Length: 567
Image (cartoon, rainbow, N blue to C red; front, side, top):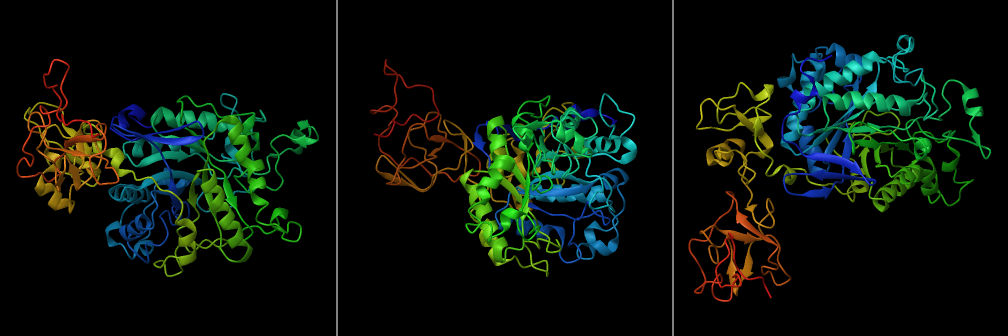
């Protein structure tokens, strides 16, 4: 077991991601939103090189800038069990474009990637892609090595290497606000779903493994992929489960990881509610043209026949179970019939408001190619256009107002008002008080999260090259952008107003009507430290008294902003 346990590694403020009612949600300090993941897979760390591919062509930060610029808000990062446990030093020839990373070990570079992704508002999903870095595809398609199958432990294969790898990752990465989850195991194509057979039942194994991860990091989402054909190693098991002439959970023509047919009768019940996400992998004719539903001769309407295939394989079972779906992989060469398939897949994602991770950033994916061309620099224009309409929820506003927390180990050595790649340490006038930190991404965000307000100091913002936005700090719409300029009581304001306030606190509206005027009493707030303020009052009368917001006895209510509700 990893010393310290998950409770100690996660006592930091974070965005709370939940999966409920078939939808992803994210909650910050004052708001909850339906969250759209628009993700990209970046592989390499699951292979023998033990690091993401392409660092021989461009530095790490350059790729992350590109990912953010293309509108993505998340990265799925494939890993291998043995690379996680052994944590090898990465060969310098894999890092020729980024000297800063030379001499680092595999997980050190993963941690650097996570930290630099955080600075760009990018989330990271950790994916256990292989058991062994040098073995792909896995000859058995199961989540454990052959020598881990017997004897059983608590009625299940021991799978101790996979379990140990996830405990290590959860302990190390739980305190990173932007690591959102664990994709437990990639494409268990040799498994069954809900069969009750200990050595192949992936649903049962995912439940136990997911609970083990949640014991270390209770806030993470747990991604559970589908199986392959669903038969497992013993076809007799399938023959005994005939229902109306059709085998339950069996899908001869499902891609690896796509088959969630059994979900409508067997769900994964995790120890923490709202954490289970089901993640099919879906590919087109560029990956396996033998699938009969890609045959234009048999299906002249192709690709109009594809939604029915997807409904059968995973959409309808998830709907019946009330389960949340995020497509973990989809992609292709995007030429010929594969282009037609890709357009249909994108439309299905839009129609059902599904999140997804595109495969892949890398151009060196043999059967799909990548979003980048072979030069590792130029995006494929047509693939970029394919992905452009997919929604992507911004993460940064959800960090606004998250409370300062006791500095974790990675921030414990910081002096007051110092920062590293992950944390900023607040100051304190009490020398014996425990040190408090915020996530570095919260610094200079226009909101005071440090009790001493040091996180919005101009010197810090200059050092970080950040300009704090003008957002509200309190009111009916806290932590929202001020709507500037605005019209109020016939006067135009280019900055926060000092008119009609109690206590002299400047305010702004957070929404305007079609005429650009303050629209509703429910849409205002006290201005935060990133806002400009009018030099003086602009109005000759006081709206707080002259027809303004007063109690029934004529007294002024004690509110920061007491302007009358707009007519």
